[in-house]
Amino acid sequence: MFKTPNFWYEDKKAPLLLRVVSVVYNFFSKIYRSIQSTKKVPIPVICIGNITVGGSGKTPVAIAVVDILKELNCSPHFLSRGYGGNSEKPIYVEANQHDYSLTGDEPLLLAKHAPCLIAKNRAEGAAIISNNKADSIIMDDGFQNFSLFKDVSMLVIDGVRGFGNHSILPAGPLREMPKDGLARANACVVLNTTEETKKIWDNYLEEQSFNRPIFYANIVVAEELQEQDVIGFAGLGLPEKFKETLQSCGANIISFHRFADHHPYTEKEIMMLAEEAKEKNATLITTEKDFIRIPEKMQDSVKICRITLQWQDKQAIKSFLEEKLNKYKNEQ
Image 1: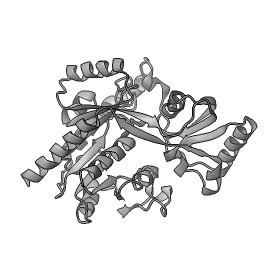
Image 2: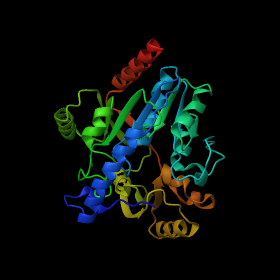
Image 3: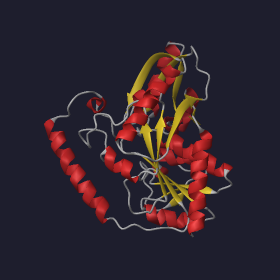
Image 4: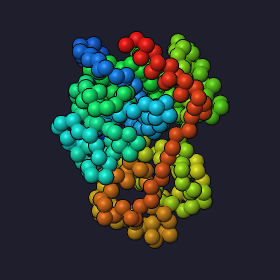
């Protein structure tokens, strides 16, 4: 499982070998994207993606966008690759029936908010959705996948970490250079900024000649954790983001344990964490995504830290989506 290297988000150069590999990776990635054939489906596709690995907040943005589409009387379905799952064929995810080992963890979260189909072949999956009473598709990730035509591409940016050391994989967290990704984006969603950093992002995107809508939002904790003693753990691309979330809501972090992204927890691991929490009279807490990967018999030992996304200007993003959908209908 993947674990984010520290130097990606530090002011340090990556080892020379990794920088050489980055050049090769970027070269072949561009070739691969250029030769992909693109298919279009008869309903609009809205892609929620990013240009970094390690988690920028795509999933809460995708859920928040689906909620807005429902307010606009749409019937959206999610489309996910099902990363981490072993299903070889497209399937609709049943949140209360399927196991993450089959579907991956993120689709199980998405399926709680709208029907979610997982498919390794995005174009094939989109075709299935378009024949299944959906009027729109929310594509979770896939910004660099050109097999499916996207009517709207929204680029999610971590407003705190940004693009790290601005290097391409594996020397840095970038899947592609910012100028290339921004050129294809119809809008940017920048998460977790202050008024000061918001100005920095406005200026940066202006310098990059990005003249399309920029939406700002914050990830907030739905639980009351102020001054609570907690032992946190997370298996994410950037586990530190969860630690920072706990700190931001005033939790007293006794200890924090980091695991690799999509780590499949064992009973022994959770038992050890639960024993530590009991000894220190603290609450054992993790993310909703991590909770899915905890053995069922151990889940009672762990509290979920539920998060929601709050738009700084919800009406702006709602108007943007409504305009795009109306434009799509008028062009048909």
